[in-house]
Amino acid sequence: MFVDSVKVYVSGGRGGDGALSFRREKYVPRGGPDGGRGGDGGDVIFMATSHKNTLIDLGYRPHLKAQNGSQGEGGRRNGKRGEPLLVEVPLGTIIKDEDGTQLADLNSSRFQVVAAQGGRGGRGNASFASSRRRTPRFAEKGEPGEERTLLLELKVLADVGMIGYPNAGKSTFLARVSAAAPKIADYPFTTLVPQLGVVYLGEERSFVIADLPGIIEGAHQGAGLGHHFLKHIERTRVLLFILDMAAVDGSDPAADYQKLCLELQKYNPALLSRPRVIAANKMDLPEARDNLEHFKKSISEEWPLFTVSAATGEGVTGLLEEIYRCLAEERALHLQPEGTAEQETIYLPPSFQYSFTSVQREGDLFIVRGTEVEKAVRRIDLESEDGVNYFQQVIETLGVENELKKKGIKEGDTVIIGEHEFTFR
Image (cartoon, rainbow, N blue to C red; front, side, top):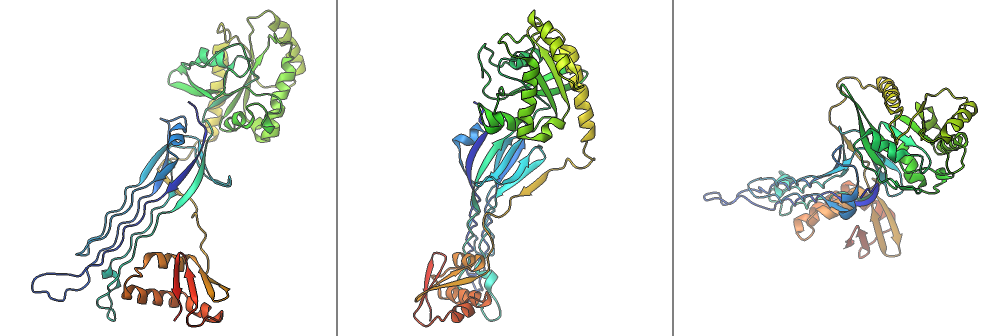
């Protein structure tokens, strides 16, 4: 089954907690703190690959979570970092935020995207030892991993996109020129999903051609298969218009061609600036010859026109050679400099926004908001006296206490930071 859009929830692994430990050895009665740091959580990473052509796997697995980091240990031994979760997606996958904002485009196998970073491991008590605090009896907890919901959308990557009305013969043409086996029948919308085929011309010459679902009038507004069809055209380098020149349904091939161009222009005007080749199909039928002459008189454009029959193979070889020539010219214009094919890692923007500390007063209740202070309250061990004292130093350093005093806080009032509630003293 071809699936070209899914919604997934990604979560980086949680960082491991730091260790609360003291050196205990024979003849060393007062060993110092030796708690190691927790391991960082693993990342969720999307990798583009040519081995996949659908997002169906993620449809069955919408929750993606990387491994948590291990807890630190005594003897200053740090915890092990969590394993990253590597998720393969097809070439051409676009990653969007929940609101539809595009975040990354995996249009090359050299790209990988870190979609959710793992949380940092907590520091062990050895990290808090100082000349004034010789025996810290607290350690940090690991940070939670980044969490977010993403929309993945696949736009098929093909060199050539076939454009034509339903029953124009696109599927028959694809079956003729490649090893693809699309469903072929005499009714509209036989092709409901993109079909890819590889065309081999010999001498190591080949290209990928896509049979895309048939376009109808109003497709740019979503009519019929609408945007599901048109979005895939954006990836192609050369447009191949397949026209039913026999027009057994009484249509006008010239009018059909103009309507197809109009739909592309309304959807994305840049599409019509790409090289195109016109294939007058079904030339094995008697009506095609008369219609061809009318078509030539009606169309003033100078794009290459080939008369073919997908059913018999007439004229197909010359058409394929012309397509390959157009592709070669396009590729030459977009050649990348040497050395740009190295693996490239893309980090998505943070799923949260860093904020300055703010204090909101509601009677005797004071609500403190701010990325750093909320992170600190999650990480510090507030069940130990040393941990509470250290947290007190943190909020003083961040200026939280001064803000509370400016808001008129007094002893006995309640302070809320994140999920924790404190009594001001």
